[in-house]
Length: 331
Image (cartoon, rainbow, N blue to C red; front, side, top):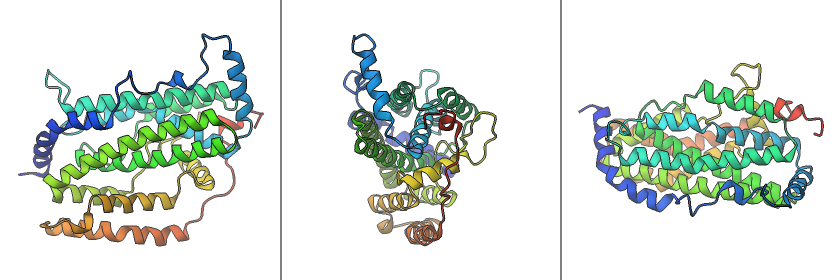
C-alpha cells in the first residue's frame, strides 16, 4: 500500500475522535471572549475617553515593539490562506454531503483564530501609532501571495507544522503581552495574553493529533516529522512584503526585531523541538522501519546540532525602517 493510502486510512480511522478533540480544545462562540470585550464600546458615552487612554498608554511602547506587534497582527489577518490550505489536506472532506470531522475542525479552528486579527487590528487603529494603510497593503499582499510551508497535502506534515507554529505564536503573543503590561499598558497586555491562551489550546490539540497518528503509523509520522525539521519550520508570514516591494527580506527584518526584543528567538525554536521530541516519546518508539529509525536518530540529535549553530548566529542590530511604523512621525 502506498504511503498516501496509508495516511488516508489513518485519517479515516481517527476521524471519529475529532468531535472529542473539538469538545476538549475549542470553545463555543457564546462562551469564548470576543474582540469587543477588550475594546472601547462605541455605544457608550465613555468611548472617546477610552480611546484617548489607549493612545496615551501606547506612547510608552518602542519602535521594535510596534514592528513586532504589527507583524503579529498581519500574520493573524492572513487567516484565509491558512484555512484554504488546511481544507485541501488529504483526508479533510467538505464536499457533496461528505463533510467529515476534519473539515468541521478546520472551520471551527479558523473561527477561533479569526478573533485574533480582529482585536489586534482594531487596537492598532485606535492607538494612532502606526500607518494603517501600509499595514492593510501588506496584509492584502500576504493573502494574495499565499504561502508554501513545505507540507504539500500531507496531513502528517501539516499537523507537525501546526503543532510547532501554534506554540511559537503562543510564546510570541505571551511575551508581547508581558512587555505591554510592564510599560503600563494593561489592556494590550490582557489582549495578547488571552490570544496566547487560545494558541496554547490549539497547540495542545494539534500535538494530540500527532500523538494519535504515531499510535497508528509511527513510521509514516516519524518520516514526516523529520522531513519538516530538515526543511525548517517557516512561519506563515515568511512571504511578508511592504507596499511596492517584492517578497524578499521583510520577514527576516521583522524576525530581527523579534530576536532583539526576545519575543521569539532561535533558542525558542530549539526548545519547542525538544518539547515535541519529549512529548511524542520519539526516543522510545519501537518496531520502526530502517528509514524511520534514521529519521528518529536525526530528530534526537537535531536539538544539540541547532544549539551549536545558534551560538554562532549573529543578528542585525540596526533598526530597519518599516513603512508600517516609520511613516508615523510620532515614533
